[in-house]
Length: 213
Image (cartoon, rainbow, N blue to C red; front, side, top):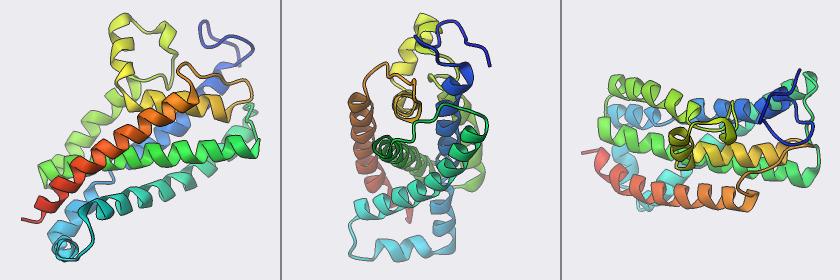
């Protein structure tokens, strides 16, 4: 596949560039709808049992985030296999692979926690599905998943700086590909994802405690 202007310095093909974005997309599309499980639990009366337990509310939220991360890793394995089959220049360095695992887990935890916050606000499955579908595509397209930051108009580049998916894709691109590079730095990417996840977890814990009432 041919190179695309502005994608990256060096010999990075667009298929290679796109691979990290597809991986992040698969994680996002599942995690952003993960909050519907909380609505099911509320409707079935399971949530009330959780809330009367002595477990901290933050631990309940973290448990859901961990569950979403495990599911995302199974998707990542499939995407890796397809990428290898298509001839993508995957970096199989074990250290890099562990970094990819960490980024996927953190990104999935972030968006599943964000999803839980939405569920706590709307409290119905119909509203949740509608809002989830409305949010998914803007988050995806306002990131560097399918085109680089250098090709974005100024206003979209500004929006992408506040989009957590941008940092997840940036880190995945640097760790996943042999010729991959990072615009921000992997440690900055991971720091932004971690900090955002902690903030969202704190917010979700407070809202989750009131969801059953």
